Image 1 (cartoon, one colour):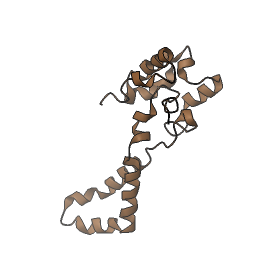
Image 2 (tube, one colour):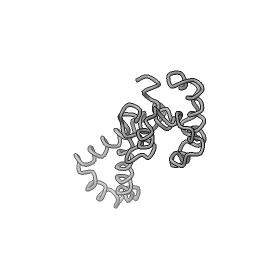
Image 3 (tube, one colour):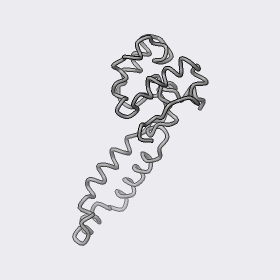
Image 4 (tube, one colour):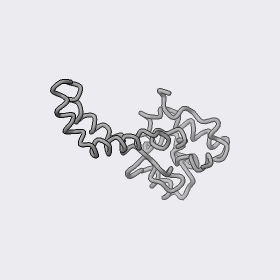
Length: 150
C-alpha cells in the first residue's frame, strides 16, 4: 500500500499502528486454538497442583482473547472500519465529504479526536498539520511517533 492508503482519516499513519502491523493478534488466536486443540485447560488444572503459575491460566486465556481482537486488516482510508467499532471520525469525514480531518477547519480543537490522545498524544494534530503542509502523498516521511512510548 502507498502512504496515502495507509493514512487514516484522523491523520495517523496505519503502517505504524499495532492494530495494523503487529502479529500479536494472529499469534494469540493461534495459541488459543492450540490450547483448545490439545485440551490445555484441563492440563493446566492438573499442573497447577505442582506449579502455582498455572493458577493464572484463565487470566492468560482472557488476555489472549482480548489481544486476538486487536487487529485491523484494512485502514479506514481504504474502506476499513479504522480502530474497530463505530468511529465518529469516519462518520464525520463522510458527512462532510472530505478526504480526512486535515481538510476540516475544526480539527485543532475537535473533540472527536480526543479518544486517540491517550495512545497517540499530540501526534494526531501534528500529523494533520503535516498533511496540510506536505500533502497526502508526501507527508508520511515527516510524521510524528505513533505512540508516545516508542
